[in-house]
Length: 138
Image (cartoon, rainbow, N blue to C red; front, side):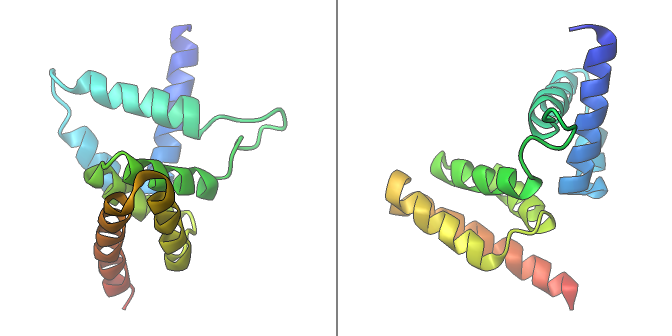
């Protein structure tokens, strides 16, 4: 991959990361960047956000809608028990239009394939995020 191509992928990933997670979150993540974890921020932005989330189809549109990616993330993060990342992506899912009822259905689906503990943890974190979100909306 050429440096220009990598830079383009990084920039498209950064723009989408900001759109989904918000400028405040991304700015905080980059403010914590140091010699030890600089490669982590580069990796996440380039690979997760630029090469995956910002992937385009032949028409130049996102290969999958942001809401669809959010739904997949919530299910996977709950199933593999990553509550910190789940909390971040719950906020992004709200930004991408995933409703509270859809989240409940996602976590019920997770219970079928990953077990009740994964569902319960997912619902617990989602309740916290929704309470914060609804408190800000007032």
